[in-house]
Length: 80
Image 1: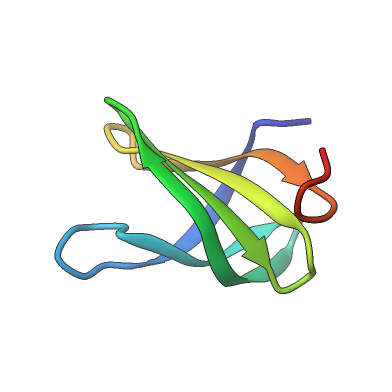
Image 2: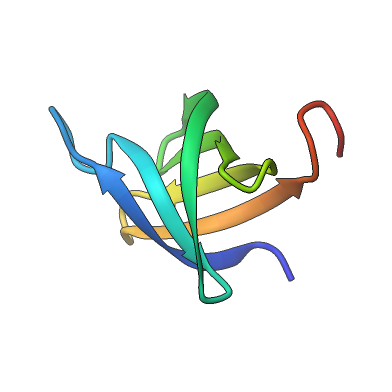
C-alpha cells in the first residue's frame, strides 16, 4: 500500500537531506542510481529517482516531521 514510510539515507551538503542516496523498503536496500526530477512544496520535497533495481520511485520528504515516503513506483521510465 502506498504511500509507504521508508528509511532514507540522504546526502546533506548545504542543507539537511539535500538528496536521497539510498533507502530501505521491505527490508531491502535500494541505491539511488540517478535523480530524474525533483521539486519542492511548502512542507514537502519530492524526488523522482531511478533505483538500482531499474524501477523509478517517487519519494516524498515531509520536512516538518522529517519523514520519508514512497508515493509511487513505476516499473520503468515512462510507464505508470
